[in-house]
Image (cartoon, rainbow, N blue to C red; front, side, top):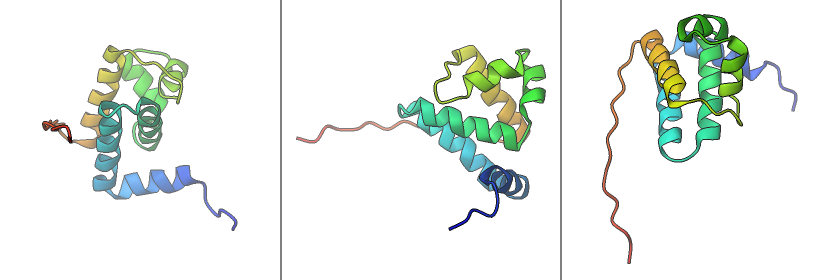
Amino acid sequence: MTITQDYKNTLTERVANDPAFAKALLDEAIALFLNGEPEVARLVLRDLVNATIGFETLAQEVKKPSKSLHRMLSAKGNPTMDNLTKILGILKTQLNVTIHVDSTFCTPEI
């Protein structure tokens, strides 16, 4: 089967036309971080940045070179908590959402 459109274009169009989808991507990235899958979380954030604010604008906001941000949000990237917090804050503002985290106790199965 031949791919007829690049997924990046599809993702960008969907994010632009469906605010709930953009929010779900941010929610998924945060959940992935909190649940021990940082590599995938960084890739989801990278796609979300590309589909919304763009790396050049993000670089100006974070006051970091865009190449550094690209590296941070790669599968093998290693953003500091400060940089990650800035990126999430900017995306939160861009998407006009608030972030709430709930935790639950898990009882071990015997």
